[in-house]
Structures are given as structure tokens and as C-alpha cells.
Image 1 (spheres, one colour):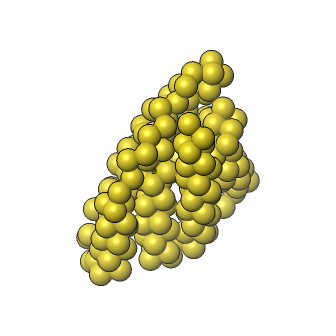
Image 2 (image 1 turned 90 degrees about the vertical axis):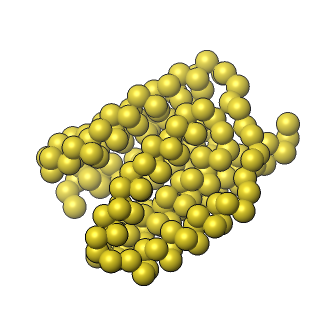
Length: 175
């Protein structure tokens, strides 16, 4: 890992921490992290990740604008047992899957990141549950691939996602 990758990971961890109670600063740091991610993925010619980072820049820019304009976020509470079912199914599929199936789950991880970001952009509390499932399955995938540092990063995101969900749920109870 080079210096730029380390900076990108550190900034994105701080951004994820900030999203729980300070979405404006979380969005600004996420924009910076996404720009760094673009530079990193360009070096590796990872087009899919470059596209995802362009989407992140646009989505987080809108979130920063909404937060700075003090626009209200739609905080809803529609969580159900479906999240636990998806999480359990994802874990079982990863542990008992063939190498070809892992490619499929890796692609699903890409789309779950887009879904979670879109829910976050719209201000729904459900985005935390999608991020939690995404980060848990991504941590397992990275661990299974031998990418232990990235697995640790995703596990840290998982913990920060749980923190963010609890903070947003507390905000929801005050309404």
C-alpha cells in the first residue's frame, strides 16, 4: 500500500465516522476520498471502481449541498427482519461458494454500494443497514481472497455503520 492509498483509507474512515452525527463533514471528506480513489484506481485501470468513485463524488456533493442548505432529511423507520435474512444468506453463500460464484458476489457488492449511497443521498435511515450488510459481506470476500488489510477496513466500516445507525435511530426517536 502506498501513501496515497493510506490517505484515502484514513479519510474515508473519518468520513464514515462523521456521517453519523455530522453529515456535512462526512460528505466533504467522502468527496475528497472519492477523488483520491479515482487517482488510485486510474493507476490500476480499474474502470468499475473509477465509475463508482465518480458516482460517489456526485452523490456526496449533493449531500454536502443539502446539509449546508439545512434541508431536512427524510428519516424513516422501515427496517424489518429482511435485513437479517439477507445478511445470513450472504454469509452462507460466501462461505460455501465456488470461485466463480465469488465473482457474482463481488458484482453484487458493487451494486449494493450504489444502492446504499442512493439511500444515503436521499436521507433514509435504511442506508445504514445496506452498508452494514455490504461491509460485512465485503469483509468476508476480502478475507477469503487474502486481502486482509481491505478486510480489516471493511470490518471497521461495519462497526462505524452500526454506530451511525444507532445515532440516526436516536435522532428518529426525537421526532
